[in-house]
Image 1 (cartoon, rainbow, N blue to C red):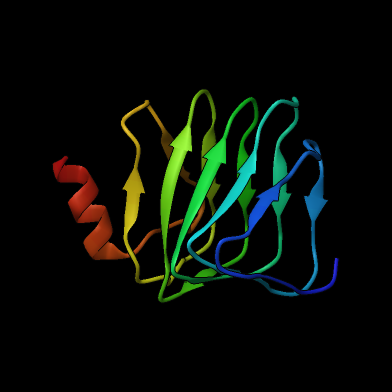
Image 2 (tube, rainbow, N blue to C red):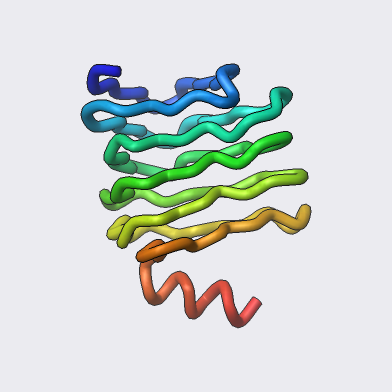
Length: 125
């Protein structure tokens, strides 16, 4: 996969569960929707991700696994219903991490992290 850039107010529906995306940088300009549901098999992103603005991430029926750094000044608004966003890199994005109250999960594996102040905020909720 080559680098790609999603502009503000765009919608990305990833209907390719069981796929591994590798390549250059994925740039997401929020507000926008980045979603995947309906198929079994995790989706793995080995590409670096850069966030500008808030990106609405919707996950169902499989995990979305990010093995490379998520950076930028943007943040994440997370909606899930039965699986997780899995982070395994030391992420440096500085925007908010907002988790919808429907029982979402963020799984941190290996060196996986979110911005320290955000982790503190999430633990107090």
